[in-house]
Image (cartoon, one colour):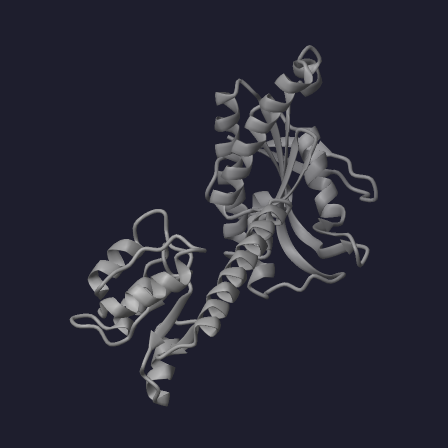
Length: 326
């Protein structure tokens, strides 16, 4: 506010309960608002020389660091267009001058409480989001996926990896050493999956289950290509941990959706194509990627591969041709 008497009144009303900083124009207000620690709430006059309160609010809204700070306009502007512009500029409330002290204090208190509740909810949401693949979490938050028991069929490329000699490697570790070691490895694997655009389905002990094609897809062939590139990166990263991994990849129609109960469900994929990817991994070679014939047919023009014989699958009356990515 550019009127010293208004600043004195506001400071007198609120200074006993809150830490306050004051600014006599918009330029100074922006400097204060953008400095750390960021304010929890801004009381902003509209009519100020040089830069109006609406301009200050729009500038704060355009900056991701300050866009979530609640702004209450404290102004003598009463016409409907000014009120509308204030809310459009990012204001959350309007207090008219001359203001009632109890009303002003109540509005400040309520908006600070709302901000604290929102931040608590966002923090809880971030924590719960760690139990989901980032792509799935994002789809739920944006309303693209419903949290209900349902499923559908879709062509996916499925990847399983696990550590060669995991049991022998960890049998002499104490629990803290093993926890740090496996979590460091799994964290790196998860980052690779996220960067590649895959869906991290789950960790199964030392194994990692990933798929491409849902909720995002670049087309069946590109999904398969991206999956193999991801697996190559995982193999190289595992070597940095002095670890060898086996990789199995298969492409086929999978049943995908939310499975479980109304109170506890998992977003995952089911079907023989998933089981085949797991079987490929268990039959793979350390440090190499073993593909099914389906995946091979999609990527054979992009990767050099060599035939690796057949494997048998329960429920399938013919051998499955396999290929190693060179």
